[in-house]
Image 1 (cartoon, rainbow, N blue to C red):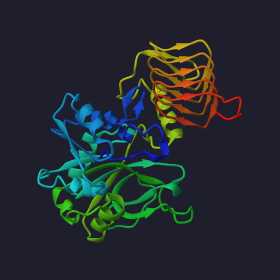
Image 2: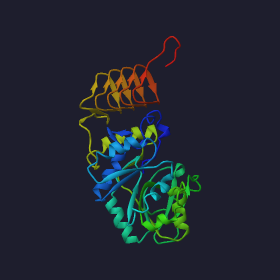
Image 3: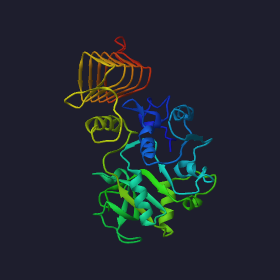
Image 4: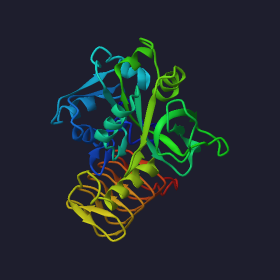
Length: 332
């Protein structure tokens, strides 16, 4: 699923769909694609709408059988997959194209088959579940919720619970294994959502649903803070995670400097990608390819081919931008 607009990352997503936002120089969609390829999936279909032409060009570079299905109008997560029903005649995997996670899809497929479930969902454990949709698990189908479990049959869903309502700290991680008959529940030609509509319907019908918590990492990179945190974590845990690293130097504080970048200024907890330069300072920031920091970037994301001649703080800067101080009007 690669239809996300990434509104919280604007203007970085003004000229690219959210799944094409770079993470350590690679489009974020490539991380879930790698997990699917590693599990031996025979074909990958990318569903998209917003600026889908970029995904068509990118998917053509994948060394696996793959294609893009472009929606004319937004159909929602389940509605977009429904468009492919005639092709989905056996067990299939659905993944979100805008998250970075260490999914062991082969292990999830094994658990799915053993459980006899119609749907198996990957989960992630969080400290504060109030901003997410939570999942309650049981040791048996239609059993009582046991909050100590990290794997089991799904018994209950709850969207954005209060602290008092939270019966679990396990959230939907955006990867599902689905039997084809489940898609018959999705109305033809309607916008329809997996987590808000289809899965509660499957549960209400008494069909078995299973879930298992993911080990390793999981990030939805739709928020600037998460986009920075995901890259810092990938760098920190580079020796244990199954993802390629770009060539470059990792500093003692966890910062990364690409081999083709140059730094003569100060950096701290930042990622400086290919062809970029820092002559001023970058702190808690991501500087994407071919950008220049002559001023100061603090807690910010700087898009590709941009120049910062000012001080920015808590900003998202789009591609090909030039940020300066207008001394006459005292505005940036």
